[in-house]
Amino acid sequence: MLVVGVVLSAVIGTAPAQVHRETSEDGHTSVSIAPTQTDNTGWNRGTGVPFSTSPDMEINLRRQIGGLQVADMNNDGLNDVVAVVYHSSSFPPYDDWHDMIFYNTGSAIESTPSWGFYRTGAYR
Image (cartoon, rainbow, N blue to C red; front, side):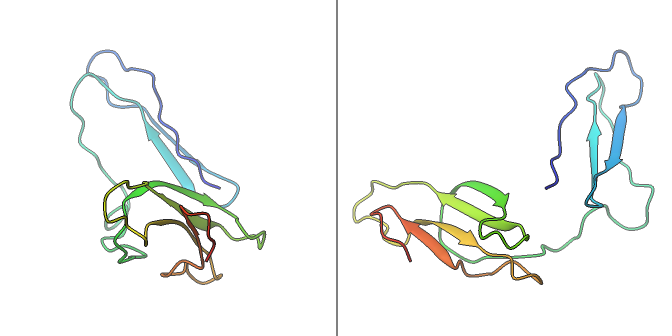
């Protein structure tokens, strides 16, 4: 699992931001930049933009997500996405608001959740 941290040390004066870059055991690169007292301009020495200009995944569900976690939920060695929704006390209640797991199929994350926990205690 890739964890990106934030460097909390301050840089004194107008020196450029301190950049720390590392590649983790899974081959992913993480970068942290120490804040400075002056504005900084971001830059990328590679070609193109540092991140994709289009999302890898889009899910069109009417939910208010309260939290996301990436974890292997079914012990298949692949990271899945767990989405937790806010509980609503509105009337009429939102029956379709439930916590969800989007399993990793090996080639993609599911666009429709395979598992859901409804606030009534029922499993889907």
